[in-house]
Image 1 (cartoon, rainbow, N blue to C red):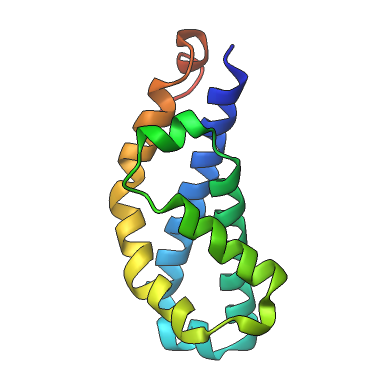
Image 2: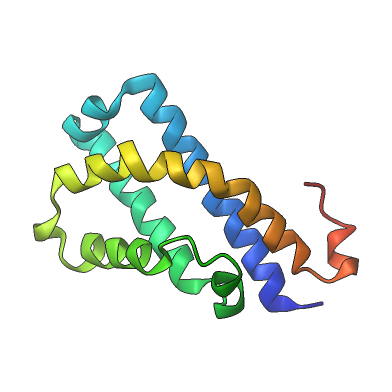
Length: 129
């Protein structure tokens, strides 16, 4: 069992779920509502924090295998939200929702495939993708 690969796999599954849920919220409620409603905005910020935490904790090997993802930018966004919340610009969050979430949606299959491929064969047989 390659523990790091397994952790990466489950982290990417969590990442996928957050991105897909965010896209559903954008489609259902619209970006204006998500940014303008305090409770929704807090939820979006929390998701961005988790995405950043996942990006920080993925193995270097995994991040190197998919270098076209701005892992450092995702992690930096988390740091700003967590430690410099007074600097949060709703327009930057809007840009993330309108531009970055759709891009991440398109690369989710590659992320999942890379994470799955990195697993040991014994771990692969226990997972259905």
